[in-house]
Length: 134
Ligand SMILES: [Zn+2]
Image 1 (cartoon, rainbow, N blue to C red):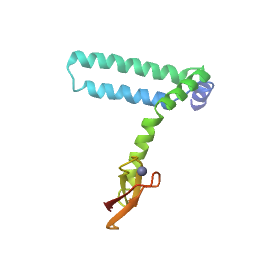
Image 2 (spheres, protein in one colour):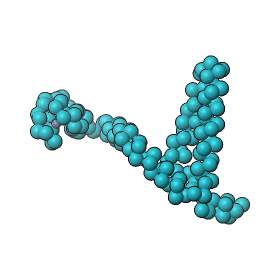
Image 3 (cartoon, rainbow, N blue to C red):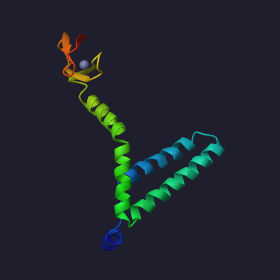
Image 4 (cartoon, helix red, strand yellow):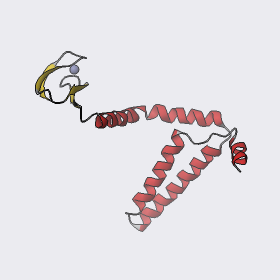
């Protein structure tokens, strides 16, 4: 059975970032649909089904080259958003040891250790200094 599956998937695209994103959106539409009026929920359901169909089409597609190009395009288009959320995650995991401040003149994010009292921060990018409590 396992071998059969492996043989079946050989030369096919499989799951990638774009497929995962579309399935996530499809699930989100279904969840939102639980809280909306029946007519709205029906429309969301149709989009979710179309999304899932598209995901399966991409997973089983033999045109791997084209699917990879689509996935690259998706990754390029969303790189800013994904970097933003990666930053949020990192700041959240470091929140006990560090405080984060934005430079008032160039908006660069500065990281300072917690518990040092009032200190003067100097922006490493533009050299602006400002006082903050840590
Ligand atoms: Zn600055």
